[in-house]
Figure 1 (tube, rainbow, N blue to C red):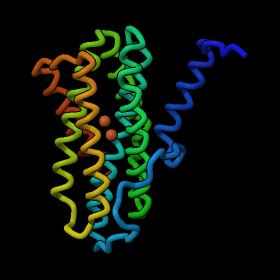
Figure 2: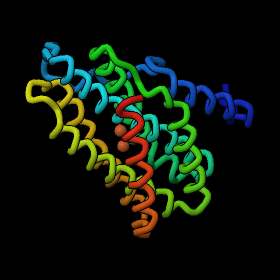
Figure 3: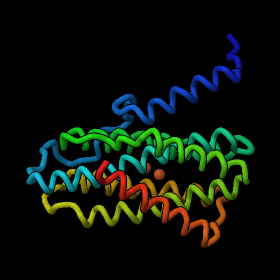
Figure 4: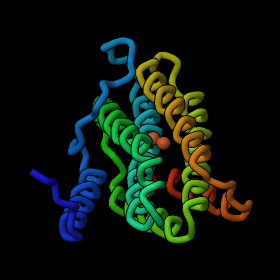
Length: 214
Ligand SMILES: [Fe+2]
Ligand SMILES: [Fe+2]
């Protein structure tokens, strides 16, 4: 039987389903298990657990933003090239989202209450970038991934020494974020102007300050 191309209604339903899965915890299956070497849960003091949960909530928010960015970009991309180039990265981002959700749950904590807002903002930015050009859109992904890698490195330094579990998760995410950056550049992403990079960094800092607590 010949498969039919998706209609606009089909695409809208698929898009809505993806958006809901990005903002509703535990609604995505992970394709890979947690990248940890042991099932042992580290013993943390209340203050340590609270701090790690704040960091993981920021990282979870970053992954929600990645979902919004990739979905928005796919909506307005000038052709299928960007969508296909970023498909593998977008799939890995779903695993990152699930890993962060899992670690937050282990810490008896929760994702940011503003998750739908973070998704919506990132979706809008991704869609706007896609409207400008493929090169800008991929450049936007490359810069986002570079900034995510910087904050993952910062968080790894801030983890309590015995929280090897969170460290292993963040290290694997960092390896893959840098691969996503390389893929975006390889497919034609161009460097962004300094004011755009500065604005992105400022926005990320606001998001991090809120998501750490809420
Ligand atoms: Fe990620
Ligand atoms: Fe990424």
